[in-house]
Image (cartoon, rainbow, N blue to C red; front, side, top):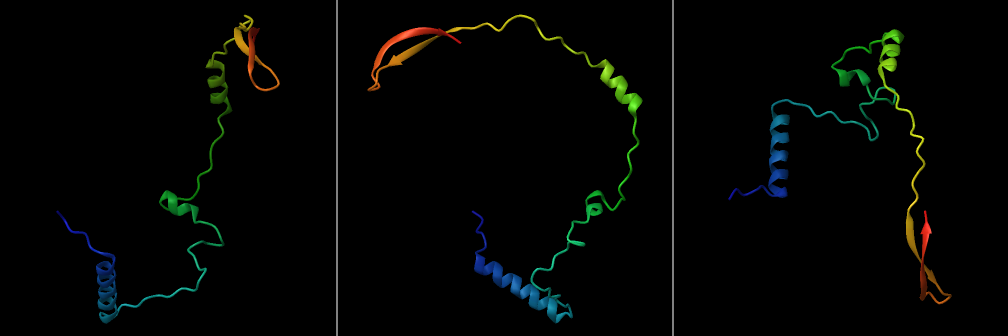
Length: 105
C-alpha cells in the first residue's frame, strides 16, 4: 500500500523548495491584496482562443433561406383532444371519503 504524504510533510517540502529557489537567486513577486490578472476589470478574451483576434462573420441570407425552405412544417392535426374519465373522491367536512364519482378531464 502506498503511503500518502501528510499535510505537514507537504508544507515542509514546499517551504524547502521555496528556500532553495531563493538561495539560487530567485525572487518572489508580491502583489497587493485585490490585484488580479484582469485587464481593465475584464478577462482577456483572446487568451482563450490562442491569441487570435476576433474574426468578423459573413452574413449568408441566401443560404439561411434555403435551409428554412427545406424544413418541413407539419400541419397541426385537427383531431380534438380526447378527454378521459377520472375517478374523483368526494370528502365531507371532516375529511372522510363519502363517495366516488367519475369526471371527464
